[in-house]
Amino acid sequence: MDPIDSLSLCESDQLLSLAGREDCSRVIHAMSQQAALSLLIFDDNLEPGLYDHPAFIDAVRRIATGDANASIRILFYSPEKLLHRCHHLPELIRRLSSRVEIRQLSRAYHHAFFVADGCGVVDRRVASRFEGIANFNDPARAAELNAFFNTTWEMSSRNIELQALQI
Image 1 (cartoon, helix red, strand yellow):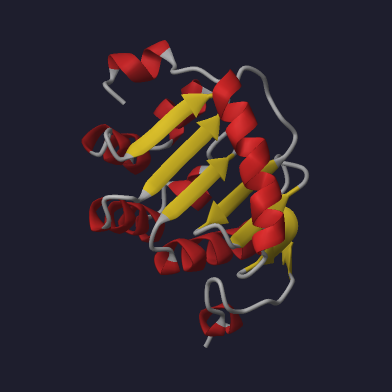
Image 2 (tube, rainbow, N blue to C red):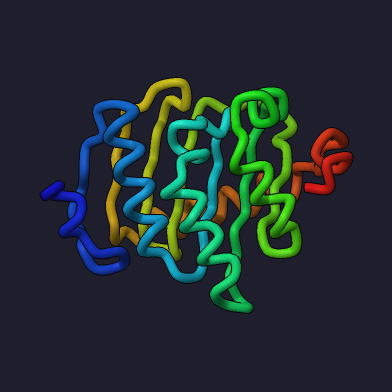
């Protein structure tokens, strides 16, 4: 059994060190599968191995259709990578456009993060690398990232290519 499977969102306060794509993927998928109300994704490229994976897509669909107060917001920089490398995520966003919001960053960032239900955090200080930290219960760090996300969200825009696809 994977030790990550024994961790509970908003309960297990254990700092995890992420050493690569597989670690990031396992933690993001575990957190998203446990999340009930919200996901924040801040990632320049929306790496397909993390976010275009069936486990993640199923979790987003479940959250978006499960509660009227659910919130899924995504900030990214590169629409070309999203549209050309991801297949499932754009389609899901298209179908759930009233429940999943996506915007384009005005510039590239070197930081990437993921927040689930306001407590679970995956924090990659260097977005181009899959090394970082994670914690299934770090509401203080989640609040800091949420505040940064909200500020950046206000400065972001809807992308014309995505609007053309009705995303």
